[in-house]
Length: 245
Image (cartoon, rainbow, N blue to C red; front, side, top):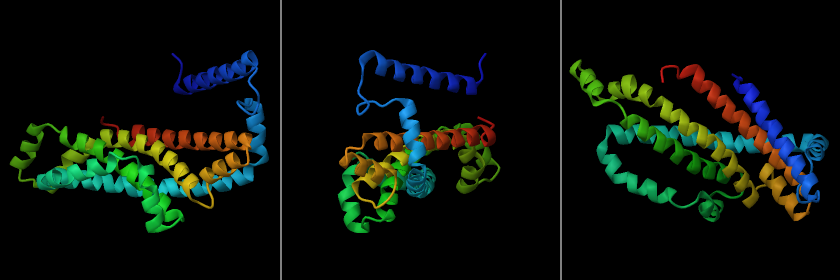
């Protein structure tokens, strides 16, 4: 059996062969689909600028992700502990998140301006709902017999949540955090394209305006690698710390 690293390497090799094979077989022009070596050279040439843009994007994505995940978990716990909150606010939460986050961009830009605050707000909205839904599912999946057992020993709602519900819900919460991490990078880049002075989204927007598609591919590749690294970090934390699932 191959290791996970071997499977990952094999996947990259297959994609690279298919990429270069398609260019050669269909004679795709470089401005439509450049070769991997060309993209790598462009990244190396603009490495300083791309890393600076990545730093700005990671700040926006990381801040919004941290706030959104915290809000999502806290809101889920509150709704499970107080069913009245669930009945009162769940329709509002669903209604707000039934609209794509990008649709709120004009309002958020008017309220918070074009600085990082508006971009972080959009990432927070996207991340919070994803983590919230998974947290709710995990918190509600606890065996009622286990809850009754703790209550028979005098445990209140908060103690039951801390000792039983949260540990049981952690696998579901981490799954939500995986998806939210990728969404956070995506929304951060889109938010930067709509209105920002720095970041990978801004690089993509300006490069498209200048018809510099090679730089667009460079920025997209850097964003993809960063997203995979963040996802891999969360997967490692899941295996390392959520050992009881």
